[in-house]
Image (tube, rainbow, N blue to C red; front, side):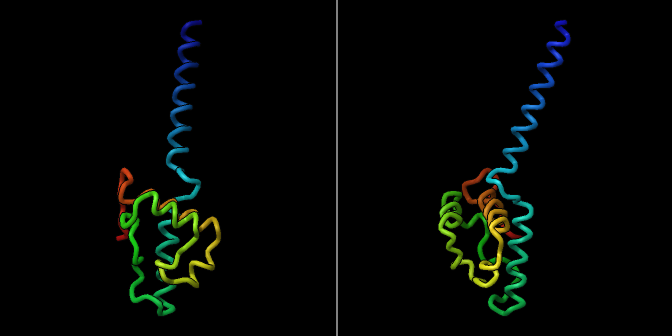
Length: 116
């Protein structure tokens, strides 16, 4: 009987740990891997249209703090990114994915990132 209780408790602990880890990775509701891909795709399309000279994004995630990224996402002011046509055509889900990528790689995040 004690063995069953111990096994049940261990199983519950591992399930809870796995769930918390999975939710923490997902973070803000967006998919940061998809966001990184979409962010690069926006600039590639923008370069092909001629508005920017490089397919590399002009703003890296580590250029701003988490709070600054949050403010940009909340106000939906993407003017400093240029490529307004591409940004205006993004779905809310795509914008959230990009925000998750930028926010997770912010200068004050545990793992600051840059676009390479």
